[in-house]
Length: 114
Picture 1 (tube, rainbow, N blue to C red):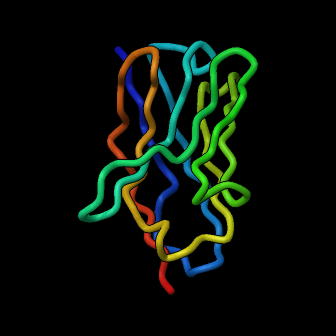
Picture 2: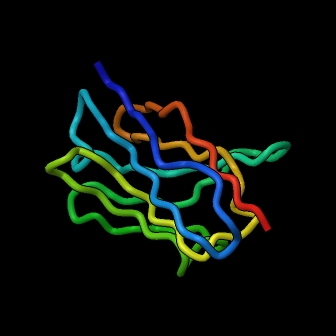
């Protein structure tokens, strides 16, 4: 059974940091491109970061480049999103997505207070 479980969201002050986790089961994260998306109220879901399968090349949206880092731990079958220098505009529900399976996690709320 494929499952993605996100955790690590919460309330943080502007300039602070959070690390989101996406624990996978039913497949191996190293075999799939893994993505983090976010959706703010009233806005469309947008791609934040991606890590490819195999060699693990990465992609970041311009809005987060230099502040966010996507990584994976194959031993823990988990993908992470390290978020630094958070801004109020980063407030959103963050979702993990496994491209090979077409599965979404349930989302985790990130709220950045100014």
